[in-house]
Structures are given as structure tokens and as C-alpha cells.
Length: 126
Image (tube, rainbow, N blue to C red):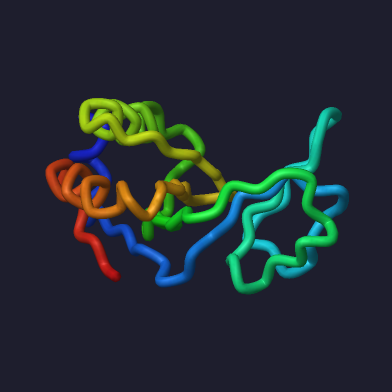
């Protein structure tokens, strides 16, 4: 199984609350900016948000980072996470960086998410 071959499975929960923003332009202090042909999406700590750039906004997100280096050839990592969260009825967003993955869940779903990840063998740091 994909998760067993990864060694120590660690994740940490960021203490900050995040917003997911449909924006008029990028934010230099954002966690992530995704700019495609249709829109600019910004994931940013709520306290760093400037409303004058906002078209639409979803607040109340908590960020969980999988604190491990994931190789490019790894197959199925996020599918295992997605299946566990779907089993718990937990909606989430995913952001991938060069060597790790992150998920965002609503504050109201955070403890259920931590419980599901723990069942998968993750050690959660807060």
C-alpha cells in the first residue's frame, strides 16, 4: 500500500486561519497563487488579506502540510487521503508544491480530518 512505504508519516496543522480568494491580482504575501486563463486564486492567511483586490472569498480554512518529501513518481498518495476524507464526509482543497502536498479544510472539519489522518498512520503536530 502506498502509505506504508513512506516511512514516518508526519503532518502539521498551521495555527493561522486561511482564506481562499478569487482575486483581481496576485498577493505578494500569499501562501499560494494559482493563475490560469480564467482566474487568479490566492490562498492567504486571513490576517494578510487586502479586501480591495477580492472578487470572491471563502474564509475559515485551516491548512495541513504533509511534512515529508514526496517523490514525483509516487502514485496514489492523495487518493488515499481523499478516500479517507470522503469516507468522513469532509470536503477539502489540495495544493501541491515541488516536493510535498497540502490540504485545506474548514475549521469545523479540522478535528474530524485529524482523526482520519491519524487512522492512516499520520503523526499530527499542531
